[in-house]
Amino acid sequence: MAFHRAPKAKQKPRSSIIYLVIAVAAISLLFLVSSLLSTNGSLFSYNASEYIAKLKRPKYRPTGNEKYLYWGNKIDCPGKHCDSCEGLGHQESSLRCALEEAMFLQRTFVMPSRMCINPIHNKKGILHQQASNESSDERWAANSCAMDSLYDMDFISETVPVILDNSKLWHQVLSTSMKLGSRGIAHLEGVNRVELKENDRYSNLLLINRTASRLSWFMECKDRNNRSAIMLPYSFLPSMAAANLRIAAEKIKARLGDYAAIHVRRGDKIKTRKDRFGVERSLHPHLDRDTRAEFILHRIAKWVPPGQTLFIASNERTPGFFSPLAARYKLAYSSNYSNIIDPLIENNYQLFMIERLILYGAKTIIKTFKEDNTDLSLTDDPKKNTKLWQIPVYTMDEE
Ligand SMILES: *[C@@H]1O[C@H](CO)[C@@H](O)[C@H](O)[C@H]1NC(C)=O
Ligand SMILES: *[C@@H]1O[C@H](CO)[C@@H](O)[C@H](O)[C@H]1NC(C)=O
Ligand SMILES: *[C@@H]1O[C@H](CO)[C@@H](O)[C@H](O)[C@H]1NC(C)=O
Ligand SMILES: *[C@@H]1O[C@H](CO)[C@@H](O)[C@H](O)[C@H]1NC(C)=O
Ligand SMILES: *[C@@H]1O[C@H](CO)[C@@H](O)[C@H](O)[C@H]1NC(C)=O
Image (cartoon, rainbow, N blue to C red; front, top):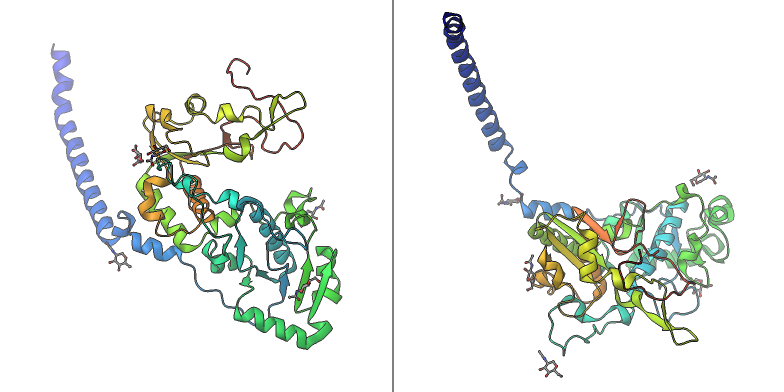
């Protein structure tokens, strides 16, 4: 007993010293935190108007020593097929290819001032999942839109200077180039970019007017096996969205809070055709199955915890198509934020731009197809398949 008592008696003063030290430390920490809060309050409180001001980019001002590169007044109109156009992603690949050439040549790129809109990709119904049936087939009327209603030209110019082909500057460049004659402008076809850069017949010209591949602008960038020659990532143009679209996306992201996102491509991608025996075949045999709610639920369970907010971007327009996912997740669509989006947009390309920014802002993003090694995807079918038509699979056991 005595043996036990002695150390206890000794311990008492020591432990009260420890308590005192802890108390002093806690009080000084509290003072430190409160002083940080008062001097640096913006670190702790989100100021939306300050943030929005940061999204706006400073105006691009040319120095006057620029040289220019022009590929025509319509993306993917290399002399033919000018009456139709492809979807936004396809046209972006072409635009990116042209911008890369301008970077390579250190020239200002003259952008078409309008982008063609493919009517297939411009159905209004996509916005409202629960829309009444009368509006579900309504389309936006426009078959083109202003380029600067999609992209922020000043923001793009921070990476590669651009001007629009309806600008005053472009008209000045044109008239100067005419006056300079053969030193001012050349109309070229089939000259590769290395030659354009290194041959001083071309490199000194004020304006290179170039006709791109007869097939599509992006064919000019097609056979680049050298990956380090790729100067702009796929994400470049999506991230260059016009300021009002980026602001809308930021507002929606703030409301979504912590969220996961899935991009579900059905529509055009689940198309089937009959072979000569009358059997339906598809280029993506598992896609129709893999993009149905019950399969999505199964597939994403390991990536998205129950109860999480799940943002769904899709071209599927059947009302309630994704509702079974609500059993495990809090579902959100762009239609939930129509008060932010509707006053802003005039076509589906603008909606796609906003949705893409929301998708890329997610904590976890699951795409339809695996595009990169690190991508999470809804299906294992390859995205690019143009030859092999297979019988669609709907059962689970087959895997
Ligand atoms: C946010 O920042 C802006 C610009 O600096 C300022 O005018 C505004 O009062 C701030 N708002 C809040 C709530 O702090
Ligand atoms: C949808 O269509 C059906 C059949 O045409 C019609 O009876 C119904 O009233 C429509 N619903 C709405 C909300 O317009
Ligand atoms: C560019 O070249 C094409 C093909 O030679 C020609 O049709 C077009 O008018 C030229 N554009 C300008 C702005 O000179
Ligand atoms: C790949 O491209 C880079 C950048 O353009 C260049 O420096 C390099 O020499 C190229 N490599 C090959 C093997 O062509
Ligand atoms: C989005 O709208 C649907 C249907 O009105 C609703 O069930 C859901 O809770 C909404 N989601 C969010 C995140 O507000």
